[in-house]
Length: 294
Image 1: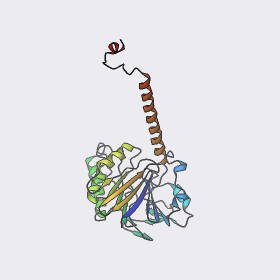
Image 2 (image 1 turned 30 degrees about the horizontal axis):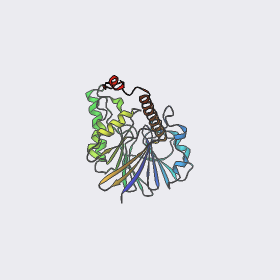
Image 3 (image 1 turned 90 degrees about the vertical axis):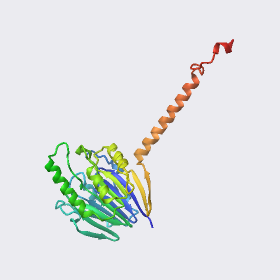
Image 4 (image 1 turned 135 degrees about the horizontal axis):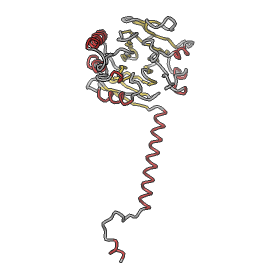
């Protein structure tokens, strides 16, 4: 039986994944400037169709940990799984590298990171989902020394080696253009090593063209790239044994923008048609007009 997941993008590295009766919420963050508007923020209404809601916090950096997630801690169906090095006042069940937790039919294992915290490997609804957090090959080729780059590579390859052999249907991984040259080196290596069936870039710091461009370039016979770039943009993914079916649903904001653009294009076409009727139809003709009228 095929597995099915519905992925919703919020901001930066924040996503939710609906699998069967469970909603997984990863590194939810509304942004420094409220990029996730109040009307687009998570609410209890998002949880009504699920038996359990699992919030994941990969590490304590503000762009991955929004205290707003605790607005739902009074709900019995909501649980928080957080990295074991989170601050003492952070609420949730702590998990360290190599540890495993079970929540009903959902299995969660923590892997390492090349920054703070952990990465998450989740098995749910017959699917295997990997959320990298800040696991990446963090290098600045135009600024770092060769020694620093070598150290970053050694740390990164060591973390990835521990993940090898785990099948991945869905993968969320950083593609951060701030690193400059070869910013996608970590993502490229991860795709070659793990071969996730669907790769979704994240942590691209508002550069929509980076996310969309990389999702196109990263495609292989094993991996499909998928970029979700607008708040509440959604993808419904069905994982068949021999293929994928992906349907993308634009956010309400993007859908309204597309409708406005379509109306504008239609209006422009009408104006051009009217202009052509009002002008002299023979103005550009090479017919001998004078001879015809005599």
